[in-house]
Length: 155
Figure 1 (tube, rainbow, N blue to C red):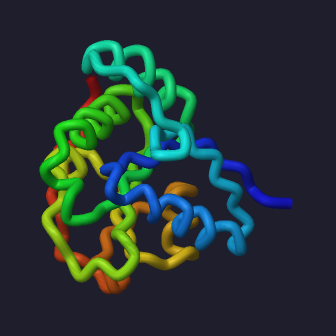
Figure 2: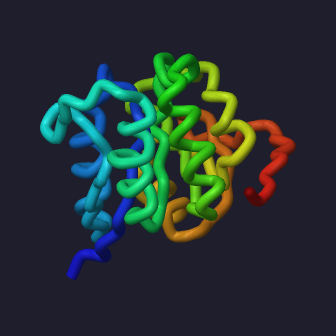
């Protein structure tokens, strides 16, 4: 029986295709990812940023037990991704960064640098371990990152 995890996967819409790849990578590891994030297959027509944050994103993040940030070169400059990470941190969510498949290393979103519990490469076992509570910092190839000084603090 698969271990079901309710997650919110923060990403930019250009990376929608990576969400399925991530779920497919974790399925053989016995993890059924139930994703509440907004993506092309589950889009909405809302235009008001306050409404989107309070009525769409916040409830989806609140529902999730774990928050994943799908790290690609585009996530660094996304105000939405940074807001989602900050909101998840205020809710006390476990925050896991997962490098995009094939990524060589790019800049991280500022909020991820500040609040992440783990950052892992494209490796199913490492991702499952991070989701389940192992704190580790990896480069995209799975090698160790230099020590990162985190300023994780409550609301």
